[in-house]
Amino acid sequence: MRRPLRSRLGHFADALAGLLVEPTISALLPEVGRYGPFTALPTAAADIPAEDAGLGEVDLLAPALAVLALLAWIGAAFAGGYALLRGRDVH
Image 1 (cartoon, rainbow, N blue to C red):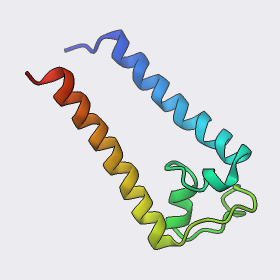
Image 2: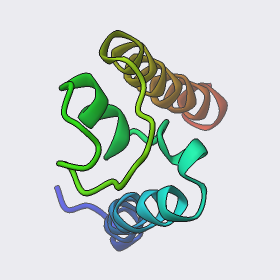
Image 3: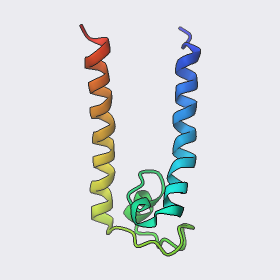
Image 4: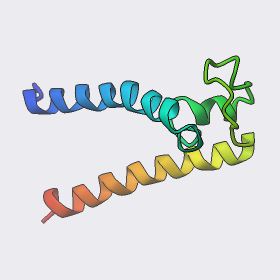
């Protein structure tokens, strides 16, 4: 079954936002960017220095806290998906 074009464009927009928005926020607001789910938190969880990952002199979270923050991001994504599913797809 083919996916509608709208769905494909949505996935493309999400990927583009993940690639562009988080690095922009990290550059402009490093104290907020350290909680980003695509760059800063995986770097912190792997215990890689921020300078080695190209993040500059950002104060990253401790590895255990970074893992908890990543799990919180995953939980938020699932909660949002559940809310959308219950709100518009399940009668």
